[in-house]
Length: 113
Length: 420
Image (cartoon, each protein chain N blue to C red):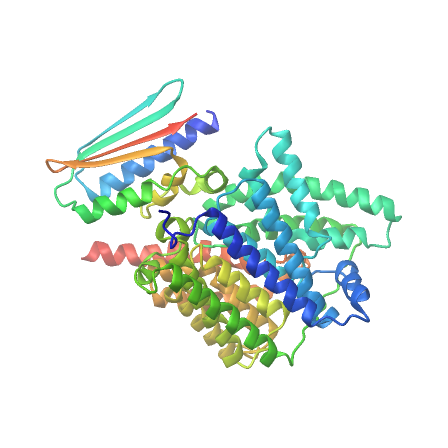
């Protein structure tokens, strides 16, 4: 498998870890690849998430892609369920949307090729 | 109207250049102009393996001048590579600055950087992606000095051999340093130090097998605590003041930095902003300088190197809450083991041992102290393996301590959680 796809799987895994440990155990993950890049959407019932958590998630996921950092450290992403590396994921992606509606948390990430 | 309190990338470069410039000015002020060229020449040609204090070797002036020029040149490389200055840029620069007082110099650092540059070009990728590995990778620069100024071969052959070796190192560092992250899972901040330790262990073992020997030596200056102490306190107080001014004349939000564990990758500039990061960097700098002075150790090239490295990583994982337990652990080690607290080994173990700060940040004071304690013994035992050729000996030790401790900590922590 090429490195790019491994990186995307690590991103997805990191999101799965986060949602599985903090929200409900029933979640949906969608991973799409197109000519422009990858789109990962994860949604889960998450009754206890508040506006502060959402703001923190947005802060971690939206610093913008920094290849000079993420290309060195990406090996830390998505490998361990006990520590989250969302700040690293934020450096690996081009855009992120975080929404909480009707007790459901939805995170959508885009990584361009 | 532009927000004048926001520190944009240009201002970040300006701040870094100001510090590099201050090293140059400080160096020029205290240079001995009668022996100026001899002093610089000695820094370049003397073997650099651990521990060679450039202040002892050539005086405060030449040492700081070397530090300032190396730092300024590295800033120019970042500028040329169009890098956004973040926590890791600051950490890599201050680490380079610090080690330019004991082991890295205006001559030997370029070889490893060029090696990584060649690697990036062969892979048809931007050097920007590898610039931090190149900067951190200069921890192997003593190998280059050792080869170039060796008597074993004619000079031009030494130069060719140094070039081949640095290209070889440039090819090894990126894949290995990325791979070894999983060994300590980001709990050892000086990851390239760990990687370079492994590489240097292999290289030195091969060289030893072919009859080369590496005699340990230590150049360690003392007696400059007043002058260097004042300089460092001014440097860090100005840093805190700058951060305070840019933070709208307040310390608000700075506490948030100490809520992070500091585990790789915790970039305070990206997470909390440059202004709060400056305050944090200045604070850890003051704490580290005070530790050296309070323990009666000397402020010199190696210890200031340690302090600068802490300051740099004050933008990339370190804060008072996670470094103090490490200091305490090493302190505990040095009052109980055979070394004195102000022995070079112990004071450097305390300063550079903060590579393990994320353990204290994630698992608390107790485990931080244990990590510091273990590190204080292990680090004294590893130099032989790489013959002092890896300047980040503490990063090498930190990787082993983290990998050894993590399963133990997690077994205890998990058991505690499972019982509740």
